[in-house]
Image (tube, rainbow, N blue to C red; front, side):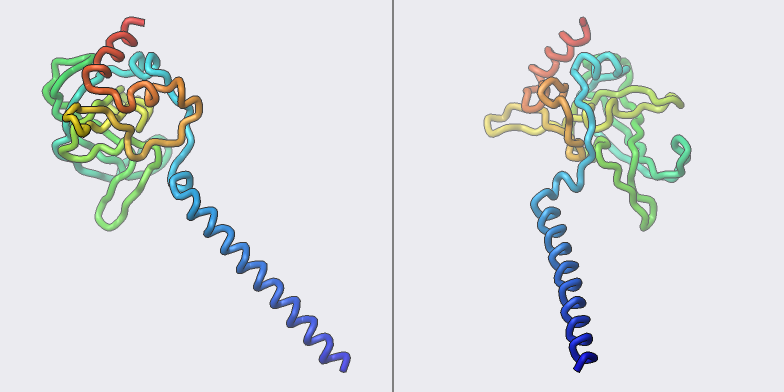
Length: 200
């Protein structure tokens, strides 16, 4: 009888542990389903437009034409980087070059891929406004990663407007950031804002 009671108690305890594990799993899945964007994104401090302009050697309206990815040593790690050839359609700051080579973190080599959340996502043949700065080795990168990349798209009335980069991190101090000031602006408005910021 005592053995049967012990077996029943063990069985009840085991069932309770399984239920707890199940409920914990369901809870984790529910949070993940409710916050899919947060799970995919990093967090960064929003950079004011004046700082974004000041840090950039080139600010342009352009179009990525082709790209390739390769393994390289970046900092103290071996990682995949992507080099994108960008046609310069209009230089807002800097200028003189018809094309620039831009390096971003992440990409695909063979069957292996790396995604760097918060990095600019330069899609081929997608017009954009880009803020570029040389890295330590002199190769151009996107200033402040995705905060320095704005894909262009026409609205319903045909006005071309700036949109935030797809891999943009969740920004702290978003209201004072360059992204907040440039998001949804027409190219003409953005050009004027950049010129004003360059004078400060």
